[in-house]
Image (tube, rainbow, N blue to C red; front, side):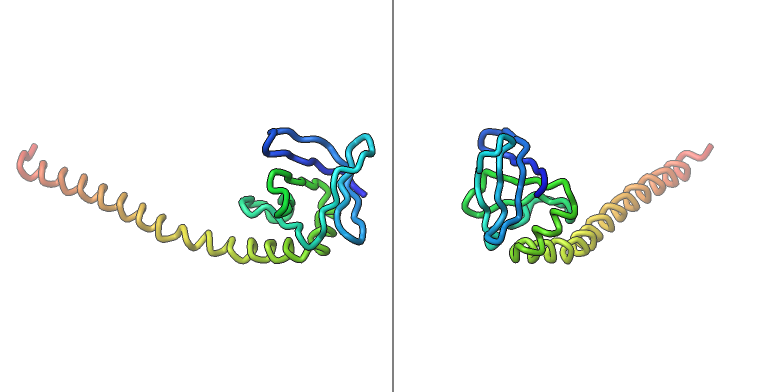
Length: 135
């Protein structure tokens, strides 16, 4: 049992909820105690657009407008352990983080090369100017 925030992206609203980890899934209950939904572990996944590895929000395929943010890291880890798709997404996010870093290296090298070319042209132009118009 723990607290979480349930976002509704369609209405652009959020509300605090209580979640219970039961055998069949995540039971989401409103602050007044009314049941909202039960998300089966088999369909719970991490939101793929997020870059947060250990705090990422959870989603389910059949309800794409609802996002569940769990601030308690221990509870978050317990959900990931029980949800096979979320475990897979977490592994992929960790593996691709290094690829994202190395994918940017050619862009950085190209930027440094362009700066070098511009500085060389400026230096060569100054040398040419000094050669044509000596002081």
